[in-house]
Length: 334
Ligand code: TYM
Image: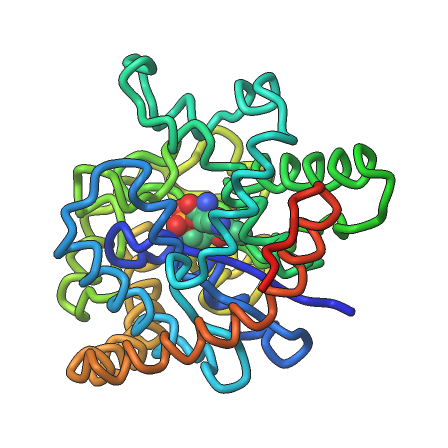
């Protein structure tokens, strides 16, 4: 059986990278797979989150997913902390995954920066919780952006080691699904940096809550180079900003990047940016309006998420019981 799990951290508003790299693909996959989509608030607190903001961002991210077309009846849409099985399996995986594996994780190195000694233990063990998110449902496929590839390799290694240690085929080895022309959307200010919620400059990203004027302003200010747009894909070499903006256009238009290059070959950035703005506004505008409608009724969002959590718990409970038994935990009697 094929089952999808994917998650997003409610550490701020979703941006265009989250949308093109992940959420839009989820909407497309929901007709082919049984899907669980999760706001991973326990991952979020691996770095400091102001409690009131965390709650607000969790609702906002849920609203963005619903507005983007994630069907909460068909799929399981829920908040990670509302299913304690994630934390429980993560602990077991802390005892399966090796320190050497975690030491290789580039995201930890990037996020901890120079002051590693002062990073939370949670930030270090983050990938084990992510493996647990996926494997507590025995999910087989995980649609993500390119930046999560290394974490998924670790999830596969952990599943494999657990199976080998206990001599049983308990967990599937989950496959990443990295789809579309924008699997790694870069910052609008610096084509060598990933578009990210944590970038200090809001001009580095397009948020899913940005209105048409803001999208226009950010794209007009987006960094470019002095040359006209390239005549061929090979000429994108060494032009990260051009590559990024053409990749965004291609993803929004749902075509390959090479086709986008052919379409704008030799044009000036100013003309191209106008078309890009129109396309971005046409795509994000309706989502934005829907999101506002959902956010006007937070109780409704909470109810949808509570139902999702109930379904998630029902799906993970038998897996958790199986794992506890395999590991040798004594069953609580009575
Ligand atoms: P997060 O919250 O950073 O991002 C959510 C999703 O958006 C994708 N993404 C991008 N795609 C393209 N370009 C970008 N600039 C960009 N930025 C983010 C991410 O790849 C991701 O798919 N660790 C995960 C959350 C997580 C998870 C999981 C994912 C926790 N448990 C289990 C899958 C399965 C994260 O921090 O995503």
